[in-house]
Structure formats: structure tokens, C-alpha cells
Image 1 (tube, rainbow, N blue to C red):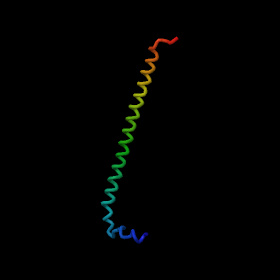
Image 2 (cartoon, rainbow, N blue to C red):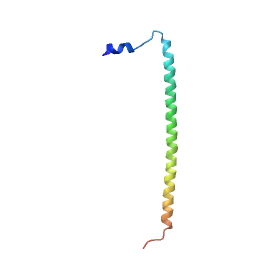
Image 3 (cartoon, one colour):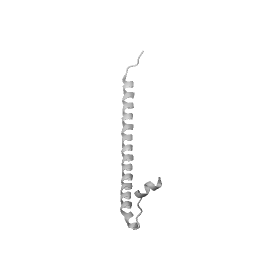
Image 4 (cartoon, helix red, strand yellow):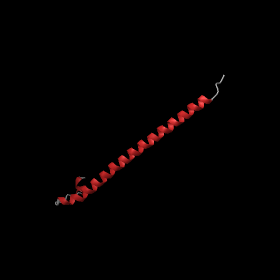
Amino acid sequence: MNAILMPFLYFPEDKTEYIPAIFSSLFFFILLVLTFMWFMRNSKKQEQETKELEQRILRERKEANENQPPQD
């Protein structure tokens, strides 16, 4: 099995050929971190909006129950 995969492996003698791969890997890693931070910020914003909506609904429900006449 290893003999079959050997033609696909390439290790250059000139190590400067690794520089573009390092730059592209670094670029995508930074992009990944920025995307993750954006998702976290967006998630916190949506969580806050949901909590505010829930509090508003509970407050309106409580006010509606207080305004109802007592049932006998």
C-alpha cells in the first residue's frame, strides 16, 4: 500500500518551496479565527435579543393576568 502512495508524496530539496504553503495556511487560519469570533459575537447578540423578548413576553403576560378581574 505504501508503494502505491509514494508517487504522490513530494518533499522538495529547496525548503523555500514551503513558504507559499505556510502563507496560505496562515491566511486560512486567521480567516478561521475571524469567522469563529464573528459567530461568537453574533450568537451573543442573538442570545441577548432572545432574553429581551422573553422578558417582554413574561412582563406582558403578568400585566394581562393582573388586569383580569378575579374569578369566583
